[in-house]
Image 1 (cartoon, rainbow, N blue to C red):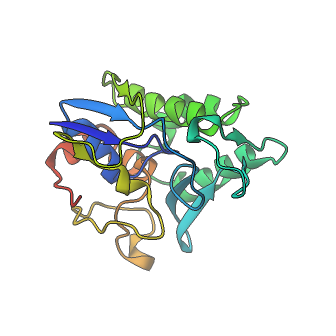
Image 2 (tube, rainbow, N blue to C red):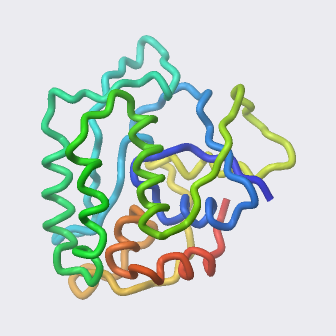
Amino acid sequence: MDVVLHPTYFPSIAHFVAMLQADRVIFEVCDNYQKQTYRNRASIFGANGKLDLNVPVVYSQKNRQLSKDVAIFNSENWQTQHLKSLESAYRTSPFFEFYIDDLLPLFQTEYKTIMAFNFTCIETIFDCLQLPFSYNTTQQFDPEPKGIIDARGLVNSRKEIQQNLTPYAQVFDSKHGFIPNLSILDLLFNEGPNTELYLESQTLNL
């Protein structure tokens, strides 16, 4: 079955489950931007629990913009801050050193729009997993697409769809317990090459 979903910043595990299990991935690129979603946010597991990494964007609620046109606010030193947070959270994880060199360019290159950056992040993860990254994009916004799995609701962070994902070992789970459906980075750093098998074995609530 085909699936339509939003390109997000280092997408959640549920996003990747949807992508890997679909016959064809279609990314929504014709939507209006909304604040406080995973379009510009990724959640990781820090020493104090769940930690949100937010990419600052130039956006005003008064003037609606398409998501693909929303610019990143690069005057803030957010890339250095995000990289430091990832190092602090995952430097002791089993596969951090194995993958971090592939991810470093994402924090050393300036990107203009959040959507272009998100596509690069997703492509980089697929490269880490040694999987082909092929997709289509929407030509217009369809609120109720027919004959396709609509996984666009996974972008919502405030009304997040609860998923029954299988627990795996996390760096700080002895302190805080298992935290499900974090960014794909959490799974990648902790499970490494087993990431693909994990994603293929999960069932989503959509």
